Image (tube, rainbow, N blue to C red; front, top):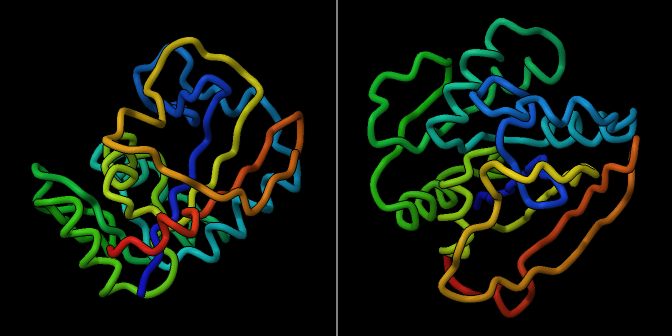
Length: 195
């Protein structure tokens, strides 16, 4: 059984848009302005090494597919080799190797993917997809790298939900120039909900 692990770079005011640049956002690349240090870099490498598949929304997929196939190194090698699932109603023929398009009902399709794919199915970026996953209680673990900056504008990680979403903090540490790593799991009462 797979686990949905959402991992995000986020500002203090909840913005997760274009942390690495590449989008038409006035603060694009904002996460590169703050050093996450060796410990923060190792956290991201370990996270990627432990990823068994990626689940991405269309915009994030397009950005990753444009950037990673031409890169080398442990991080790039892992991203390029593992299965990638892109949730899209418009993409028909993904070019990045090991990519599969899924569409339809998010709750049904992701629950099916969790049954079919073992290990960590990791979601980067993908604001709309993440909000839908949270709404349907499909997120098993939420990893936030919170950067000490207020951006004041941009896509927010969290949107409206029909009910509260209780989480349990399992890890908290500060790395680099004040970047805080927060790892949450669904709280016990929410973890028993069927997926």
